[in-house]
Image (cartoon, rainbow over all chains, first blue to last red; front, side, top):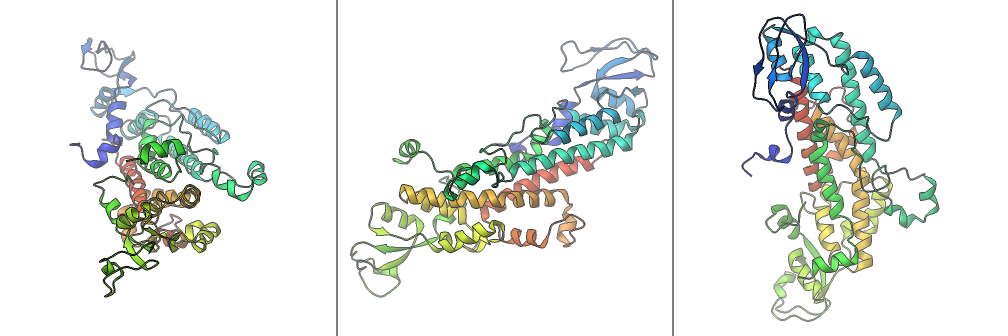
Length: 218
Length: 194
């Protein structure tokens, strides 16, 4: 409870970025050095040796730090290419029901790479706009997910008006919203709001008699 | 919002007054009616705060009709266009439409409770999309834009503004949550790592 209220609800984007910087990435160093042992989430923590023409695998935070000192070139991860992002966009558009699964730290890693190592990426501005559209498509899906299910569906039509209230409030037709495939940072964005919405709906839902009897008898 | 014992919101919602009819004579409580009569007669009407009305009605000393904020007229307005009903002015000054309705629902009999809760839930889920749109919009525009009244190209319509004015207290709470989270993400996106 010592945490400020906003951190208590969910991890902050900055914390998620910190976690994401443990991801491993390939670099081409521009200095020579033998193996180093670093405090790391990976079991061994041994990285290197660094020998200029050949690649080395290091955690992202080390790569970024070296990059800032102009001591390495970061090899762009294979998913961060214009081609791959366009494919993802396509898949995301075709699949209107659910979210295309992304690498866990997709958003954080792509953002820091664009910020720090834009010169090592193929076409940074294009990547940036593709990432932005991808984000907007995914957010739009959450929005449509919150709309009440279409009342003109045949099943709802046959039923008398009274039972219209029984169909779930979300477009999936039930009282849930499918979030499978969202990455943690996207969940952070929605979490407090959706949590509140769910709580609100629960409080407005009539409990079955069995439950109510158990709860209300003081 | 939780019905927590210590929740200030819950206490405020509890003090809203409900018009009740007494089912029996009560000696010495005439002041509840606001008149100079010392006693309350059977069938007398009085506006009682909900915390009192609750206990009295549960013990069948009083009875009450469904109060006007949940009446048929409001229901039809909600059916016609859920997001243009100003819930904020219906119950109390802050708008405790959901909270108070929930309280009342729990002392009604089964059929009435189902109906009232159904109305509340339906209203909420129909208002939800606009609520989320607004929260997302305000979250993604910078604070200065909002304060100066300049909405930019954001696409919040006049209807959206009217809806924002008419939000219930709990809806406003959700709005603030959504806006806060959106703003946090926006700041993160806009701050480059160096």
